[in-house]
Image (cartoon, rainbow, N blue to C red; front, side, top):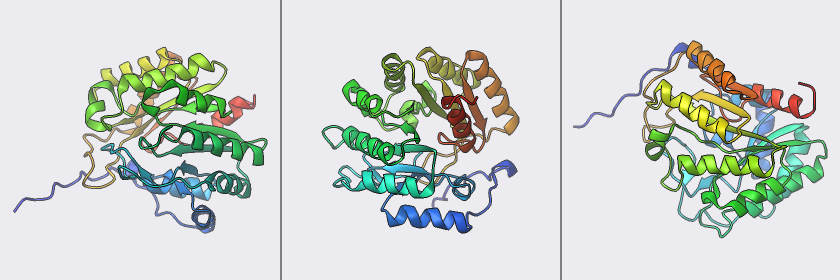
Length: 297
């Protein structure tokens, strides 16, 4: 009988408290009551307790089912996830208002099955949130839209202050880690287009580490992102969500993340958040970015 491969034990710096508390439960009730998905839950983020108890959440638009099957991601996949919720823009705007947020990260599943891949719906959600919350700053963590620049342009035109798209991993591992419709160069081209067309806006990306990349490959990826004008970068530890997903090749210690942060800062990134529990939507990074945009940093 075949033995199920065992996952390596998490080191002590990755241990987090089980989420709970009044604020946590309130945010859960608000998002579920409005039929909104959060990437915090769907992607099994280890920071969910910390973020929700501090009153922040990352909303995932277009439902909880993605057309892509990236091998690192816990989000449910399907070829045709179903119709979009036309009430989602209103529900999202109302929930943000109830939570009293001044900065929100919005992301989405991929919808390759739709004619515009969901770009129009995402833009409507952003505009609705801004109409209901005039002082709100929005970071949109967008799909690659298969590199179709008119769809990427809709994200710029939506008015979001921070335009984000994740490279996810180094060039060599992209084919192994991401869905075949994604691509390392394609992601860089999306980020480059965003900065070229909206140089006054802030661009952001993220890398997961611990998938078998080398130090030189990490440096090269950071350099590639700087060359296309990425301003903000997050570096975090990949954690295997289930046994069906890619295994962790290595757990990087906190001091190694700090070394990478310093190396990235030397390349000219405006801000880098790096650490084992850092994720692309990370509370400390959002705090800095909001202050930066409002002229307080």
